[in-house]
Image (tube, rainbow, N blue to C red):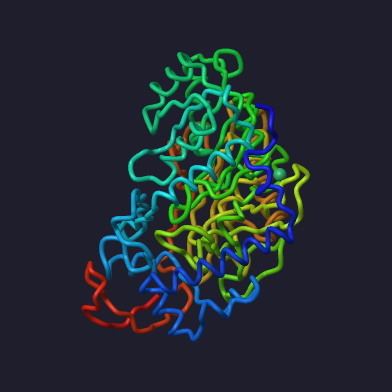
Length: 466
Ligand SMILES: [Zn+2]
């Protein structure tokens, strides 16, 4: 097969037709949610909006936001699946779960049709990243309740030879890479780096002993940080593609094409807004803000104006690859953001700095402290074994580049020896927060909600905060 797109008609739909399609889908989806989801029915009425009020995509601003907390609270109020759900449990065929900071996993349900469409989107993104039926693909993501687990079916439906590997010890994974000579692997950027380093320590030549030619990464911003991407690509002599997904919608909602200038979002399934997380007002295209996603088709649990907690930007200009769907770039989580002298600092900014200094290994750790009621941060980084410059030089470089990029300096920089910082095997924890308190999140809104039993009869009413 030599086709350029998985679904040419949808992926290259002229922009005005794409917007028309989104508007029609959104109108139907809002109506569906209003009619079938007890939560949305109550919430829309409470906010005085009806699905018929949506005459254009811009009218979506009139509808209320939801976030992870609403999702979790509504699930607790109406187990198992919560009352955001718009179908009966008998129509649900799959749930993924994500554990949050509270320890209560939030479930993401799919109908049979949702699941089919989810996998078709995954095939589309794999195809855009260059996967073809001739590829051997290693799916090295967690299979236990994780929404990224089933993405392997998307690769299989595309025709690739799929190895359902999951998260296994590195030695075993390297054995599989040697024995099966796969061409594509998907993992996190931290793990791609760790695995490459581990292979080298075992005497494996990544360029000649293995056949990996593409690495798909997700779960951390690294794949979209040019210096990180380049470092992993050089380590493996492979092409790196960044994907982005959220457990509440699809394993991957967006992915890079070969132009690698942002991640094409499946805009026939998701409508994206970018807002200022403080004022909740929209920010212009190209400017950073919180990504807000609205599903356009997912029936089991529609998500209307879901605040993802991810900070990023959107580019709606047409890509050189011919795809018309918007490209997003995700730079970090709101939760990981620290505010230093009024400047928003993300771990990805520090990663950008340390990956651009050749005498460092690229590993880093940020420690956040409070000093005289001011938030400050320290950076630890590692000198590479090949470095022939002084620690003092490296400290100054890190400090200077951080100041240049962010406008603020770290309080302290410490240079460690290679291997001293802990290596992440999956999602890297780059921030240690030693402050005594956290800046409170936006104010809480209360409104009345009803509690339902499993037959969806009202059993109590109460106040819900979110
Ligand atoms: Zn493109």
